[in-house]
Length: 279
Length: 272
Image 1 (cartoon, rainbow over the protein chains, first blue to last red):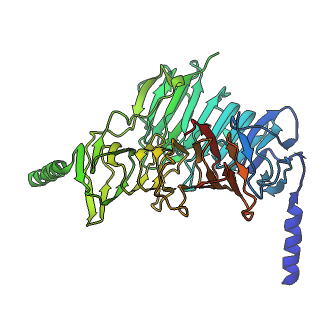
Image 2: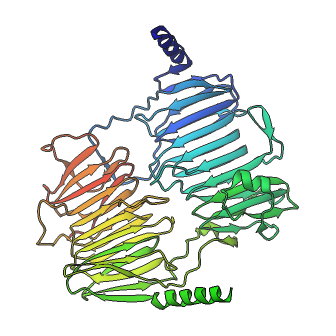
Image 3: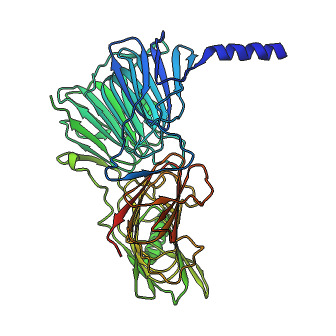
């Protein structure tokens, strides 16, 4: 029995690797990369390369001009050293970056990769930005989320952590819209662009030429639109209602240019803004 | 069926007979304890010995950012308000009056209280648009609860703000602002902190005159502490992890702030 535990421990140590570094690099063999981030802001950027590169950078999240920082005892100086843990999980590579003496991460990812960000960051100034990646899945409690130039997004912000005012703002722009199926665990699924938020406002920019069906509910907020759409009516697409919205949500629907690409947006508090995207 | 409708009608009329848009209570020097839920509050100290609660519908609409101008409202789940409420006197004796204002069709109250009285107040706001403010209070103030923004101005202290014990459905406080503190309270006890703030997630902004004496204790596990004032680290105090002890002009009234995930900003304001 003792030998068995010993063998299991050795196997686990082998499967989880650690690194303490200023710049972490890994060449993932999997398309799905899971990033677990804790108490930090992050910029996730797709680039024309094969490696995932993680670097802590000095970046001020909030304007503190004219203010002097006073020393809180026991705090280590910023050294921007990160200590990522890497695990192989089914068909994905999971990289966990524990909190350290840094405030902001720059994470470069292969632009064709599928990225999942799991993030808890409780400072009001914490922010997640995602730019120029293929598919992005986000489950986060963080101040603001900005997603720009992606082919697919699925965002859940908020959750079971009581006491945090979830996220403040979620902004989505320059989406590379498509109605091709997305693949999850090798299985094709309908492509439904999704944001489900707690108290965050949601701002979605949509080109006026896009054929789209937008399903939405804002439980205690307002929905404002600058799009040329059909008047809102009660949503009837049960597959979307059941899979994308809380069971008791009053889901509404609008379509632009006769309908097409499906988008679902929901929040409990905060408004939803649908804006026309400039050329 | 007809009977049921009549009963429902009678219940509705009965309920509305007790709801109102202004309430007054004579306090006669009693300590006041107020309990509120999901409503913004504007608490103002006055020279009267009365508690006056007024509803205000017009100030409750969510703010629409300037960059959303020109968008058309296509759906709203903002619950309608008629400004009526039904305060309940929970306890009333020689020393204390406890009033509960249940969640109602009013989500903004202007509450006038005797400015020198001892006030305890509990609030809990889920909406990200809520705000609680206190001004012109020279008695002891014990506030507990969560609101996106909590403002204190022209208060004499001692002031205590805590997160409260009631379960909140959505959020904690995000921003706590304290300005125009009144340092001329001659009756304060040196062992009692002038202000004592306990918060999990809020950023705390405090304005202080640069010429007053203050002893500062800040605890924050993840937030930072910034100031424009000449605080000097108090090296006489034993070091405690994640804590800062500082003295302004060799020390004076005690300010304690504990915000696990919030940063603290202390700025100068006009000298006394």
